[in-house]
Each structure stands twice: as C-alpha cells, then as structure tokens.
Image (cartoon, rainbow, N blue to C red; front, top):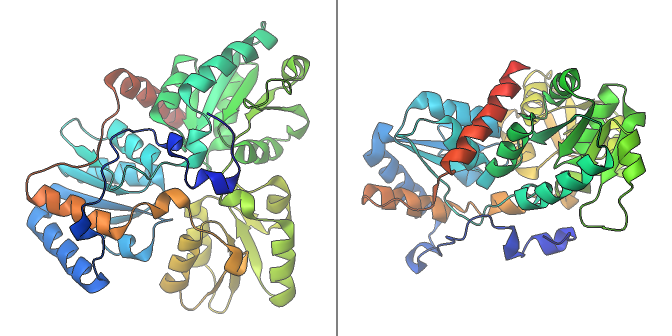
Length: 377
C-alpha cells in the first residue's frame, strides 16, 4: 500500500482488509437515540446469554453503555472466551475482532458491527508488504538471527508471520518483556507496526543507540549498513491519534493547570513520553485515574473517548484531554456506529449473521502460537 498522510487515511478504501462491506440498510440510518437504545436493549434481552458485547475503551458512549465488558483489545478477547457466549459482538476494529476469533472456541462466532472499522496503523504493515521487506532485511544482515515482534494492533496474518519466523506478539504493557524474550533467542528485533512504541521500548531497555528505522515506502532510503549495525529495526508505522500529541500540548496544559499531571500512551512520540509525568497502556491510564485522590488533575494523552469516559466515571477527579479541543477520535472506531450495533443484533434475533470475522485456519493456528509466546513473557 502507499504511505499516506493522516487526512488521506480517513477515506482510503484500500485500508479495509475485508471486502464484504455491507451497507447499513436505509431504515437504520436515522434512528433517534432513545428508539435505538430501546431496540438494542430489546434485542439483547431476546438473545440473552447467547451474546456478549465488547466495548473497547476508545468507543463512544452509545456503544460502551451496552457493553458487557469494557477494556483494551486483548483483555476483551479473553473475557469473550471466558464468557462462552455463542455470539461475540466486538465494538472495536478489525484486528481486535480477529484476535477474539483466534482465542475463542470454534463454536463462538465473532461479529464486527461495521466492516469499515479497519485500523489504519494495522494497515501500514500488511503481510505481503512485510514478506517483501523481510527478504531485504535478512539479506542486509545475513549472519544475524532476526526475531520479529508485532504489536497486538496488527492483522492476524502478520501475527502468523511473526510466529513462523520465531517471533511473537506484544501489548503496550509487555513490549519490554517481549523484547527481552526475543534477545534471549536472537541477535536483532524487527518491531512492527508502531515505531513510537518500539522506540519508547528501546529507551526503556537502555538500547536507544541501537535503533534503525525501516521505511517500506521509500526504496531509496533504506540503509543496509544501518540495519546490519543495529539491534532494533523499527517499522515506519504509527497511530494517527497518538502521533498527534506534541510537547507543546504538555507545556500548555501545565501552564493553565499548574497542579496537573500528564499521562500518555506509549504510542506517542518519544519526546512526548519524555515530557509526560507517566506513560502507560489504556489499562494503566484507567488505573491511574481510578487511584487518583479527589481533586487531582490528570491530563490524558490518548484517544478522546477514553478521556471522556474517565471524566464521567470519576467525577471527583479533574480529567482533561491533553490537546483540548484539538484532540481527535479514532477514525476506525468511529465506524462502529450504534445504528450498526442495532442492525447486527436485530439480524441475530431474526437468525441472520452479519459481518462475521473468521480468521483462516492456518493463520489462526500460527497467530495463536504468537499469542502463546507472548504469554510466556
């Protein structure tokens, strides 16, 4: 695929991994919130224990208010597997629904309300593209044992690729342990697809001088000598939401709120993580606000819906969006419109399955291996 600026990502259909992009039927497009809420609740009552609804932390209020579980992607997949419901409705994005399909039982069906909910960062490291890059990277360091690590925010076929090459998956909270696991078994790490999480992890391990960056969109910009001389190779991908944060956002919030502390996600740029008081996963961000004393002020550097949730859930804490009105939501998460949720639930009541996510058996097995290796760390 072609590297794009953030504005282009919003509309480029090549980012959608699945080609079964069903349009929402016209009768669902203009539902009022009160009617929609009633219809969703009625469908959930009809389906009973046959369905579990997962709401990612970055989802809008109208989705998470119907969720049985709210959390980050892998946590939600584990909860779906434990729930043993026949249908898993994932209010997230494609790679999350794939992960749920990998770890749930074969008799559980995973449904993504809208197939257009395809993470742009996951689309920056597609398996065919990585295959070609892997050939170049291994040729640049022919005597090295390179271990690939992919962030959880990637498609199942990339997770499978990493497993086939002796690598594993990681989350933002265990990336440093995944790196240590890899270096116990190899000489170099190729980290995909988020260069910022990879760089922040390298700094955490004291390996900031051992980094090379691999830009798959720039054939002339690749330096084989740099790859050969580096221990960590970072794929040039990023999250459009977290890359938006800047150091001056932190300076501005501290100027207007002198007592404020700042916590950011490790998908943010290195200089933002350095300037913040704390960095951590969505779970760590939630925990930090939960454990804050009444009256404390925390500015949050992550997707705006999570900040809004934390404001509602913890009214005794002053929770601020780090970049104020300039903070943005996730374009992919936005596609999980509550009207889509109404539609897929009512279709299930009628005995019809829409937008089923099903990972191919071979990919599912290998991706499962990559996840199992992550659990080792």
